Structures are given as structure tokens and as C-alpha cells.
Amino acid sequence: MTNILVVNSSALGPHSVSKALVDNTVEKLKLSHPDANIVIRDVGANPIPHLTADNVVPEPETDAQKAARSLSDELIGEVQVADIVVLGAPMYNFGIPSTLKAWFDHLLRAGVTFRYTEAGPEGLLKGKRAIVVLSRGGFYSEGPLQVLDAQEPHLRALLGFVGITDVTYVRAEKLAISPEERESSIAHATTEVEAVVNQVSAAA
Ligand SMILES: Cc1cc2nc3c(=O)[nH]c(=O)nc-3n(C[C@H](O)[C@H](O)[C@H](O)COP(=O)(O)O)c2cc1C
Image (cartoon, helix red, strand yellow):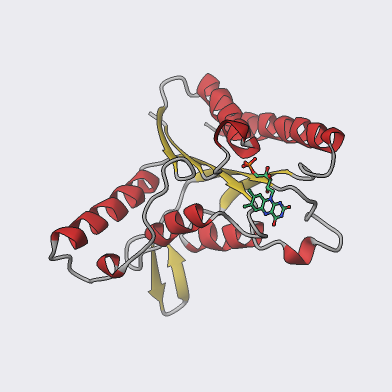
């Protein structure tokens, strides 16, 4: 059975473009993986706590420390068992939402999801397929604003660091430029979603 983990991080709920595209991706994946076990983690609607001192103790002792570790373990476990990860990431102030950053702060744990070796760091969450939907008000793929894009490069670094390297990035850009640009961008991203799901399904 295929395990699919869905992570949404928009704060805009039903108005979110990334969530709509992620939902579309999952609906299409379900057609080729009808028995898939799907876990949905919406950190935009239900933010997880940022790291505190309770998270970073080597051995949890107090109830607060144990609860903090238990949540981190659960979040890591969801990724460990996932065959496919579908991630929705809006651009907020050039980067990813702080809620998504908090999720990664829990996920990146030395010795569990990555380790340091003499040859350098090694990601331990290998063998997964990921689809990342990026939404942005402006246009950052090329041109003068490209240098300000701290969203896609950051995600590439974070996912790559834990060993998730088989990733397709679908970009919905220019969403705030004009209604026409928005509509055309969403239509283009929807076509890309279809193409990537076909790829994933063919490989299954
Ligand atoms: C708090 C906030 C910050 C934003 N910052 C940027 C930004 O730096 N650059 C940009 O192009 N769009 C920015 N936007 C626009 C969003 O990227 C755009 O609305 C996108 O559709 C949000 O994704 P979503 O629809 O999945 O929620 C911002 C939106 C919000 C709510």
C-alpha cells in the first residue's frame, strides 16, 4: 500500500491556491493509488508549536519535554513511512510560512532524519517521491526578483538535506499581478500537476 503524506501550510484556508492545487494533486494520485493511505497535516490551519527548550533536551524528563518529543516523533514518523509527500508552500515575505518552517524544525533531527559522516551530511529519508506546490503573488522564476526567492531554494535545501531529492516543483506565480495572470498561472500549474501525477503513476 502506498502512503501519501500531504502537508499544507497556507493560512488562507479555502482561498488558498496552493491548497487547491495540492487537493487536485491528491485527487489525481488517488485515481492511480486507490488504496493509498493518506495522512493530511495542515500546519496552516492547525499550526504546530515552534521549538522551545523542551524540544532540544537530549533525554526528555518532564511531562512538557515528553509531550514535545512525542509530537516531533509523530511528525517525523509521518514522513518516514511516506512513499509520496505532497507539500503546499505559499511564499510569505520571500520565504516559506513560519508554520512550515516550524514543521521542518521538528523534522530535521540529527541521527534520525540526517546524520553527519566523514564525507559530509547524509539525508536518511531516502527513496521518497515529492511534489511541491509553490504559490506566489509575484514572479520569481526569472528576472529581477529571482534573487529575492528564499522560498524554493530553502525548500530544496531542507528536503535535500534529509534525503528527499526526487522532487518536482510546481509553481503558481503572478497570482497578485492581475486576474488574467492569476487564472492563466493556475491553469498552467494544474496542467503541470497532471503531468507530474502521470509520471508518478507510471513509475508506481
Ligand atoms: C503574509 C503574506 C506574505 C506574502 N508575501 C509575498 C511575497 O513576499 N512575495 C509574493 O510574491 N507574494 C507574497 N504573498 C502573496 C502570496 O504568496 C500569494 O497570495 C499566494 O497565493 C499565497 O499562497 P496560498 O494562496 O496558497 O495561500 C504574501 C501573502 C501573504 C498572506
